[in-house]
Image (cartoon, rainbow, N blue to C red; front, top):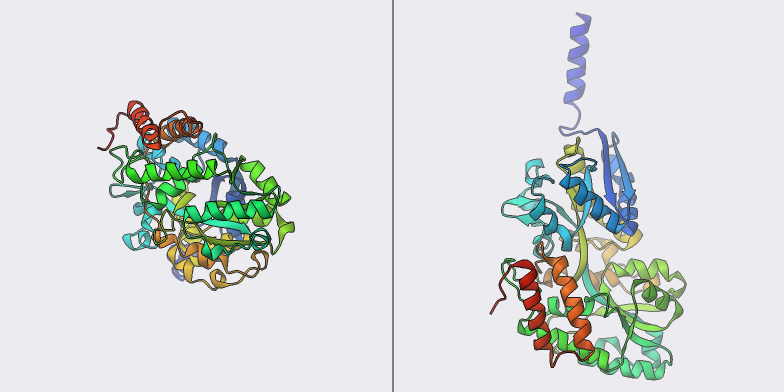
Length: 423
């Protein structure tokens, strides 16, 4: 009788608990600031789910990719519960290992949940009726600039509406600030400017359905022409990722154009420049043209090997699907939310001391709904290698014009992928 009563009491106790209370442990693979941001959300998550222990392992960017691909190839052996996946690499996973990650719909991810994120963030994460990952951070492009360098040259950033305006302003700023470059680019090691301007203009390496190559379409050609014009104007100095950070701190660059996540890089790496930096919208090819693009961004996916999928999904729902989770990462490390509702969080409208009192997130996040989706496909890495080489040759005078350069890139990508070039 006593045993019966105890069981009944236990049943009542369980009945009074939340219907989906979870417990156990989950492990996440990530890297650098992204890993730090995930760690920052654990305290808030544990207020809701005190019995779920979250361990975030900072493996580094490339090791995370290499180890997770190897784990998928081994049938899930050694994989954690959650893996951080860059959007540009996402379709490499789904195409090679469609069974390695859980379709989030099976855990409760609804069509309404999906609509909380912009289309451009979901394009590479969903295949047919399956959703393999939930959007995390995005990279709405902005121009980060040194107020003092612009002011000394008499340049009002609000007057810079086109890339031609940017070139003209760069010449004035460099003349007024000896030893300062208008901007930096890694032309040999990256296609960042080409990709940003192309995306702004609605062009990409591949068509939206991923079935043809579009890198040589007119808007992409326009983008490549403008990249060369900036380089030839002498307003761009060569710098890789680390050198750009050094230049920011040393005061030898006036502008960095990057995804919004670069806010955290400047603020944390160049803390001594407090109040000197500001933000404005990226320029366009025409005065009334689009001024929104995306560069970079990641997602979180739950592995099929996870022993605690429900708990892992609860973590995704909190960290990526609530304003609290997203704004925590934005405040601490500048990880830009993809969650549209985060645009209305009070923090977004606050003036920030480091940025001279400017409400930079209101300006940056305001472009999110305007970003055109850009399909990476499983061939993105192959295409990127080809485009970088073609860009280097073109900027060095190795092609008669940008159309010839991108026709060559398209031909090489077709040979590497088997996809047709869109006519």
